[in-house]
Length: 379
Image (cartoon, rainbow, N blue to C red; front, side, top):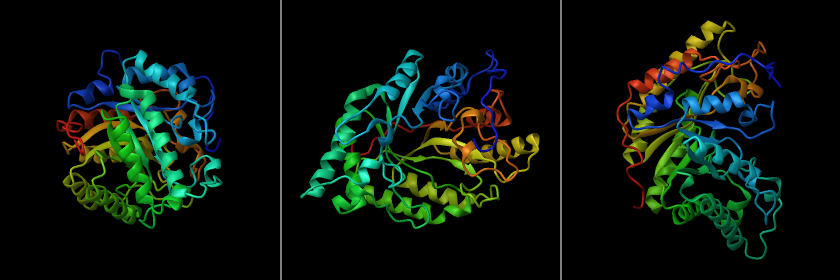
């Protein structure tokens, strides 16, 4: 694994049981705090669920969970005619055993690179639009009906906007149906029909750093289109992978465009959308090697971001994309020039709480009360 993060046995530390967990703090302002959990092989970056220490940390700190990869098409749809729900079922059962709510990620990752291989070569037949529509309806309805009210919020569509062009991504489904808008609209309408209780979220990774301007504009265009077409979308999922740009040649950290980001969020909530932070972490690739220096910079940057986001009453639940550096997806992508493991999550690889955890707690303590989730598009 790149970055040299060993997955060996280590000392374990959890929050002081006399102190409030992050979800307990979040609940005071009407929100949940939660995390992703991965059902991959034990000892791998995606295998957090197999680690009893990670499961204990989830119970100690979280009120909500989300599958990292286990509910995506590539995991549950091995062929055009079959589904496999073994992995997501086991994580949901754990969540219910411990009284944790569950988000669903994702019903449609509208990105050509992340569908299972069979989608690209699928023969949509003599009536491709009808067949593509049938398949999208079948997939969304199958997942939503299987889980019923056990999943309270869905990232119905994920990353449909091209990040550096600002237009909609093209996939096998959009080619068959004639437009990407037709595909994503259908996914939301089917989700509303089959999961009428659920919060329906459009999820994307536009952020407040300067390399996101075109992406933000494209997302606003999509959200405006949803409202114009009467598509039942309740909230924008702001992934919140902040810090260093996620690319091989990036070296800088931060440079937040706070005013531009506020304008973006103001436009989103002005259209009647709620907000969810769905995948929070702080990429530290551009920071010095010294651990205290890095941890302080990550925590300060996170605090500024969360303070801004939590000043909006439309801001609902907050989920991090991994509770520990040990199981962060960022460890084997866009490696640091010095080759050191990244320090991007609330807990380090040895399950020790970091300044980032304190920054999240302090931001939650200062949050305005949330009214997110009380309104639903099309209701």
